Each structure stands twice: as structure tokens, then as C-alpha cells.
Image (cartoon, rainbow, N blue to C red; front, side, top):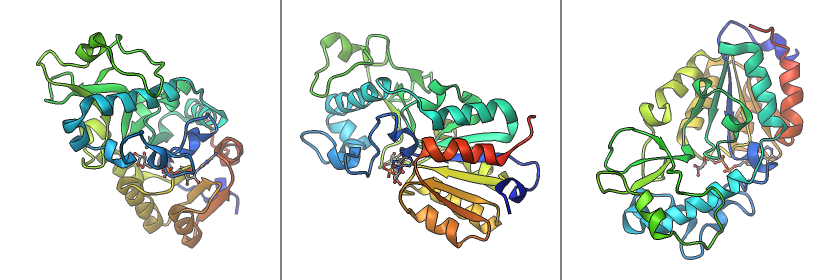
Length: 270
Ligand code: APR
């Protein structure tokens, strides 16, 4: 049965993306050979850097690492997979939802709407006061350049720009390993609601290492709606899809597989 025939009901088509969708844009994944959790920074274990504890003890070092990663993202451009999602959203409107683990901002830069894009791990272009001063989330200060060489240090002007008016540090708006999802900052409940209502979940480029995506996929499999996984390698999600009655593992790269899969969905414009 074709994919489009498997989709029943008026609910949303939900896409769940990970670092793999941006790999062909030149941004390293996390757990791949050159991945961020493999390479990390010169002095510290990678995942150590991505914690509130690390920020408490070495805020400058953590900022330097995130500004370097942000520079890599700004040097990258969205690829055919990001653009195919934008075209589909423009076609089907509110029947479209995108849940992304990526903090690289490429979905929004490609043209995905902020309203239908849940950035469940944050975004490197955003920050917030560590003491919680309003506004809850804000753009990085203009004094912080996007282009950032790996070993570059922060100038005094940049260091003071990364302070809130209250005197405390501004911190990157990313979900750290020693922190929990919530709704106001990371759309936790919205993402679960999307999995409850979805008529299909299409998972692209994620190894399935984090809890909210895993819960979403389990909910979809338990509901028996189509679970389609796009990845060049088998993952825990592709195995779940292959065990599911209406699951499929489409093995290949996002920029090749996703545009044709979206065409195959053949969804009427709304
Ligand atoms: N197209 C599609 N998928 C790809 C491609 C590609 N061109 N290249 C690699 N992949 C796949 C890999 O096979 C792997 O399954 O993308 C996945 C990347 O997995 P990870 O590196 O683990 O990244 P991700 O799943 O996004 O990590 C999830 O973990 O540490 C946290 O916050 C971090 O958001 C991140 C989360």
C-alpha cells in the first residue's frame, strides 16, 4: 500500500528531525565519527561542556565552545531536505508540524515557520539570563559576532555583553544534559500532544539518544499510525519502525530520500 493511502484522518503530519538532516549542510552530527560528542573541546570531555554544572564552573569556556559551534552553523546553508519541509508546510499549513532537536537554526533559516517548529533543545542564536530575568529567551547580543574561530577568546566588550542587566551571566538557550524539558522553553507538552494527534510521524536523521523523541516514537508505534524513518544507518527508531505494522525504514541520506518521500505523500493543499 502506498504511503499516502496509509495516512488516515485529518490530524497533523509530524516530522521529527535530528543532526542528520543538517549533516549534508556541513554541520557535524553528535555521535558520528567527527561528531561533537566525540571531538568536543580541547580540554574537556564533550558532554561535560553541555551541562549547567560546567557553565557554573567555567562560563567563559562553555560560551567559547557554543560560539564556535554557532559559527559552524552560520557558515552552513539549508539543504534540499530542509527546503522540502518548507515547501510542504506552505502547501498543507496547519496539517504540518516540525519537532526538531537541532539547535543549528537551519529549519527557520530555510523558511519553516516558528509557530509550527518546536525547537525542543533550544537554538544557538538565542540566550537567556541565568537568573531568569525577562525576557525568557532573547537573541544573542549584537556585539557577539557569528563568525567564531575555534580557539578564539572573548574580548572584554563581549564578556560584558554576555551579562544580563541584573549582573548575572546570559547563558546559551540550549537544553543541557543535567536539565529537563519543559513547555515554556522547549515545547515539551506540545511535542507530546503532536505525537498523540499525528496521522503519521516521519523521523529524519536522529540516532534516538534522547528521551522526548523516544517517547514520541513509542507513542506513535503504540497507536499503530505510520512511523517512517529516514537514515543512512539503522537506529533504535528504524528497528521500532520495522517492528511496527505501518512502519518503514527508508535507508539513505535526508537530502535524497526526504524530498521524494514528501512527494509520495501526495497531500492535498489546505
Ligand atoms: N541524512 C540523514 N541522516 C543522517 C545523515 C544524512 N546525511 N548523516 C548522518 N545521519 C544520521 C546518523 O546515522 C545518526 O543516526 O543522523 C543521526 C545523528 O545522530 P546523533 O549524532 O546522535 O544526533 P541526534 O540524534 O540529533 O542527537 C540528539 O542528542 O546530545 C543530544 O542535544 C543533542 O540534539 C542532540 C540529541
